[in-house]
Image: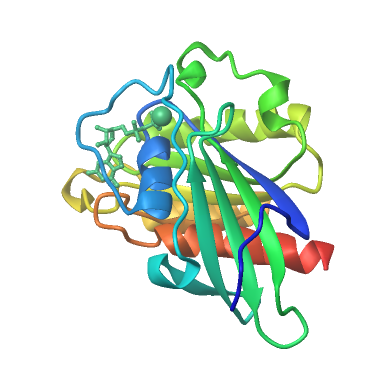
Length: 214
Ligand code: GDP
Ligand code: MG
């Protein structure tokens, strides 16, 4: 009954940022394909692939208290994933939100992310690794980068990833909370490996954006 078209009512561009190796690409693959990769493969020269999933069979969660299903298209360069949400519910029946999630191809290693990456982004998932203090210290640098290149109203969610490696923890949850409060960011600890809080992180960003624009 609910046909997902390539048309949409809202287009949200969301960028993944943070130091190299913090788990950005795995957070994205966990969210879009429910996949995790232990061996970090190069994301340069992405293969083009399109996969359309039945909204109801793939995933379902709520956005702004409305049940949402989505269709996924993978590997459309220059972004890594397009997630098409269809809003089911009174008032918003049939409304579609297209979330374009951009992942870097490793440019962050060379501090070479261009302003084109940030252009038009309404949301950012800023990731650090809870086992690597330096990646947390660099959050300030990424915030500066966002201030310089992105829209000032961008919705930012900070994610302390690899929460499964609690025994190797170098950043406490409280330190993450405190920084988030100081900078006015949403915050969650995530694990792409164990699929903890990954959906919630994107859900929170999308819900915040949706509240702002609607
Ligand atoms: P990126 O450079 O930020 O895109 O990071 P990747 O997604 O390529 O991940 C870097 C490495 O961290 C890979 O070896 C992943 O398997 C690993 N990794 C990513 N997320 C997690 C996680 O939540 N837990 C653990 N234990 N390892 C992770
Ligand atoms: Mg990556």
